[in-house]
Length: 74
Image (cartoon, rainbow, N blue to C red; front, side, top):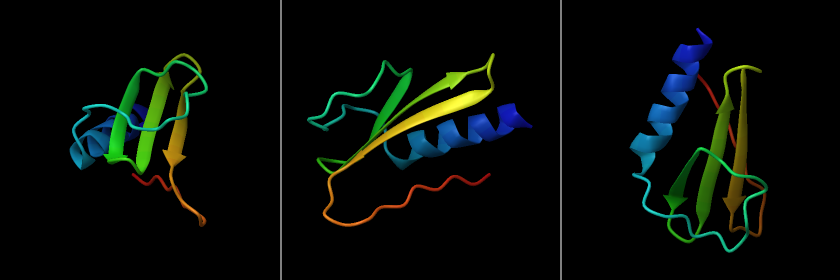
């Protein structure tokens, strides 16, 4: 089940936008396996999957002056 959810998340993000390059001027907190530019010069997403600990770590950079929301659903 967790593998199915993980596959769905990865596929969904890749469908949203093909990974070309990220535009955030900030350096990510750590090294990530995957990244995608959700919106040019606005939103970048990085993530790493740890199968042993069954964890997914996300880092999201958004250029905004207001609140943002980040949601995940199967």
